[in-house]
Image 1 (spheres, protein in one colour):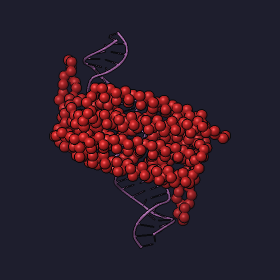
Image 2 (image 1 turned 30 degrees about the horizontal axis):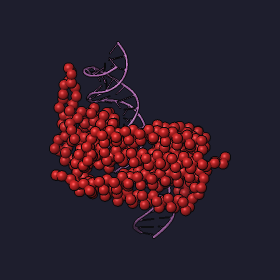
Image 3 (image 1 turned 135 degrees about the horizontal axis):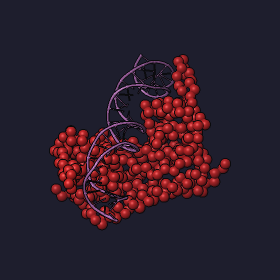
Image 4 (image 1 turned 120 degrees about the vertical axis):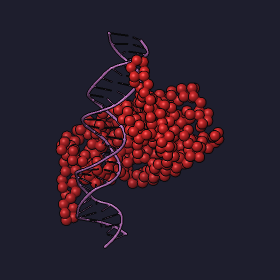
Length: 186
Length: 186
DNA sequence: AATACCATGTAATCCGTTACATGATTTA
DNA sequence: TAAATCATGTAACGGATTACATGGTATT
């Protein structure tokens, strides 16, 4: 599927970037739906260059030369556009180790189950807080009044991440309540 | 992390099974949070046997001999129990190609965006319907009145899958409304 | 001077999918 | 008797992580 390829093309299509820039965007902005380590990004950039999808210009930084600034080519733009317009079948449901453990709930005592749920709840509450802070910053600093504004995409996917976490938290809350009111017979 | 290993151990811990049985359980019952193809299951069973986590008995089926019935060993039970009690840090948010495309929403016209959203909506509505049918069947055929009942795990994770899909659908609905009422300026 | 961050790459390994390969049994 | 399902495996490949490897620049 080469999704990383299109994620990179899409980002470089917005503005020219270095591999390091891409890494930061992936792991800070897109982290709620796509991400990649630098060890995957650099080889992919090389591959995309070989394929004629992107080109780069080497910039000297400070004293020694370093830093490759990548731009998208016409070929790259066309390929990206083809990809984005294509309607995909639903991907398989994402895997979830925590839910796998919950499935095997009968292997645990009520205390162990509750410890698991509470730990998960705490972590997810913190995650939701961070997402909500990000949303406040986005709303305060960026124009999302129309779909034309370049930040509208950021807004709409952040909204989905918040919804997702709230829904997960709701489920955790319900589970905790059910388990807490249950008296296990040993 | 070897999660497949523990998924297999957990299932064989419930009852003895063949590789083919595991395949069916993964791709029918656990599919909302874990799954695997037979080409991954058979080598893993071999590895777990070598590691002393499981053993098998070969059963003759019909005329020719076939079918390996796997059981968990004491060592396997201990390893599984260690795994299930261990509290994990949150996994990274699952990747989502559709959201990646939505992030690049500015590369599409309103019509193209709406087509994408409607296609996604239709597919996810069908998925939700299936999950709800599964839930009705589960409630009608299985005892989930207490956490002790072996089917309680099935119930609780199915509930989360339904919640998850409803939340995703809600988001899609909001997006469609926002995009539909927007008049793009070309 | 030390630490954090900028910047780029490769190698080994692991996890997972697709494709290749075979054959028996059950059901329509 | 044809098709679906049961049943088990391997090979090639792709996608992703961890670890290895290096060195410059900016901040404290």
